[in-house]
Image 1 (tube, rainbow, N blue to C red):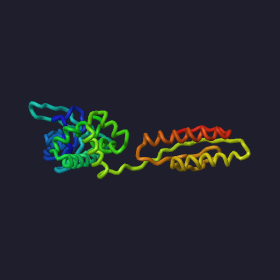
Image 2: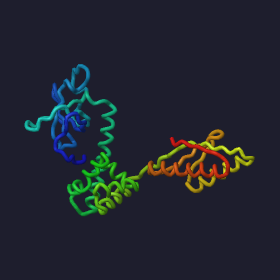
Image 3: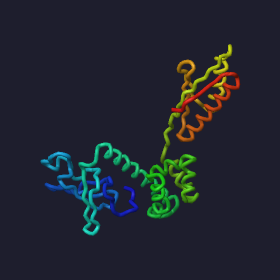
Image 4: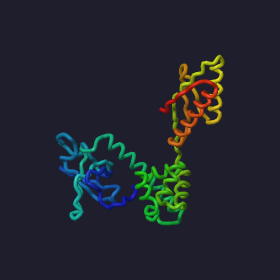
Length: 259
């Protein structure tokens, strides 16, 4: 698991851990994200109902998502709760765990590429990526987009490290294409109006690599596939602006809505 910049979890933070011991009235959890610091779940915080046997809910070796209830640094004591974590939050935390595992491997490769210890890679860019994007993994993802790369530079990451981040991301990540869609309405009351509309749409399709589907007069569904959602939406709006201008130039009218 990725190294945490702080050494102790915060109250009400959701953390991932591994069950190490189970007693009749408590379970002990090794916190994966905090250098294996140990926390305890009292039987009263295992489930929202009466618990007859704690082993029905936790077993040694099991991965669990728990909420931090109390931290006493002097006594080295961390109180945890299992019952206060809902299913959705638990699943999202597990997905985050998998992303951080992948990010940890990518940071190790980044350190190797720059011939520095992994700890230095965290200090140089790892913690900054987490601060900027919320997750180190997302930082690697965003480096593959022009906007994301620009953010890295603006936030103080050197061009050398930004290029290295992008290089690692290109080798280990594949950004899925998204479909940006919108509906455009085109009208032209001239005798050859339909032909004029078809020609305007054909020009836009060839110029912008659009997919155009007829819905019903006067509506058309237009979509653009892209790996950068923001850039794709901007390009689609620009294409729509051009289509509306072109149809007006030949005596028609148009309007659009991006979904």
